[in-house]
Image (tube, rainbow, N blue to C red; front, side, top):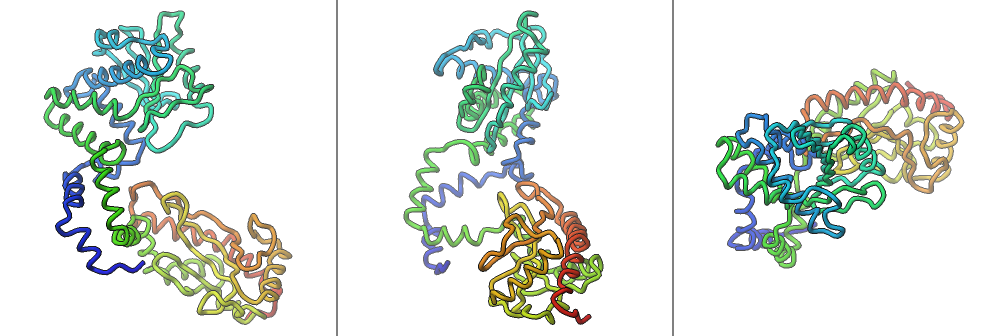
Length: 413
């Protein structure tokens, strides 16, 4: 979209709302720096560490008690209160110093065992994901069998989510919905009491900062953001369109190496492959020997006029999936039909559609890599993996496609 400098100046320079939001995010946060914001697994690791009284953070059992406070208050304040569970007073009087915290025990995110209190606590954490069908019921049965009530054990099941999502009626029976904001408030109190080592207290404060920036509601900042969008939509839309992302940066590096990628595909397939029209966000490759085939240069979707090309593109959630496919694009209908018939007769892998579409067919699609979230990957390592995967794709698919194309006419090599 078009955006002049004046629109950007009005957004950025001397704008009190923009300055306030910028100041709120101006504090360095190590959890953001290591890409943890949406990494649910890493949230679980950090929480399991600070909840464990045996770890050398100096908090003792205060963080675990904070979780219990948040959970018991939620259990006794919501509909069908208490659910026969532990009361807030019970949680306040309990001794958690000898508690044992387990991570991913039987796939349960966090499990706390307090033998001295005959208590076991199962915690299912959801940051951006939602409840999987049947998982809460399964986890509850596992806990109840391992720490049975008839042996004197009390069980507490905590469903910890960003917005206090209610667990499903059937599988989530007996689980207490706890909002992440409620836990953050209790942990704030721990940090403010100046307990724990200085480093641990700073880390806890940084973690809570990250939660509030990215996962918890902030009425003031949300009001300011709404105001900015209302007044400066053009400039903000432009900035969103230009936002750099880790996958995009990786793809730009692939663009720079397109000649090398083509050479690797050529060697693997035994067919000369060359770059066609490429951009920093989409790579296209062609087999020049196919240009001599009848109707091959009857396309109207690329400058090379080739009807069929190999594309490498990004997509999927967050553009984290990089895939490859043949594309039989827009062009002369008879030529497209002849190419498609030759491929189908040869029995090569085509696609789920199973028929020739009027304009576009994406054939033999395959995911090359699925990148970790938040750009937590080594670009050189991923480029190496992509090169290997493209070479494998060339062996498995370009070679059979080349043989199928031979039926359209004598290839000139």
